[in-house]
Image 1 (cartoon, rainbow, N blue to C red):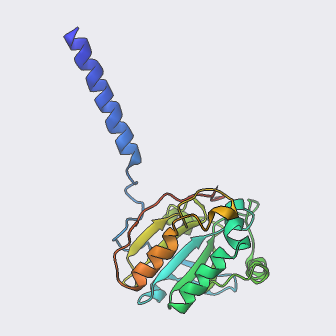
Image 2 (cartoon, rainbow, N blue to C red):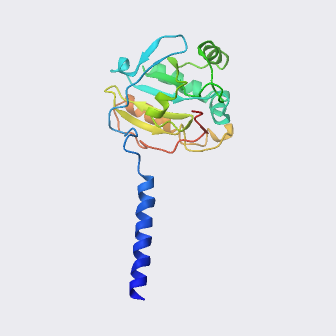
Image 3 (cartoon, rainbow, N blue to C red):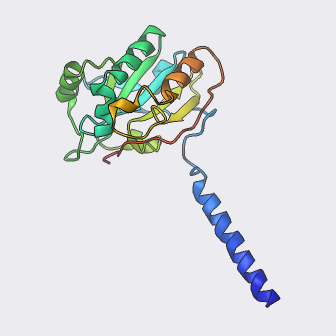
Length: 207
């Protein structure tokens, strides 16, 4: 009986370790405090953009999909645009990334991406086109939106959700803790980020 009891305890302990291991980030997943993965990809106007070109500036990466209700929540309310304007006012480079594959929800070509920015009054520094999903997979981008903040030295300082309430309801925006806004302003001011890793929410990226 004692042997059986020990075996059960050992089994539970192993199961617990497996669960804990499942919660750990993958070895190749970006890590806060470490260099952000470098990339090169074309923007909506056909210009090649390299993350390394923005060294010396704070950078925000926003994964976006205009057809996703969680993305629409933040654009139709004007919340995303106000964050983009705030970024611009603080000298932050805001890059919106579209990783939807051709034929999948949210896919657009360059002219359509520019028209989308115009109609929804978006104000990113550039819209990056990633139809192969290579940049998205490099960052393990999971949802739209999924937000990242990179400091002027090129180190990742925040990754996660735009805020703390994971619903598509516009009415929840004022009640949520604005994780992305807080992180961006902290990095601009060379202050520690209060919540450097949070859970992203939204539609899955359509790789």
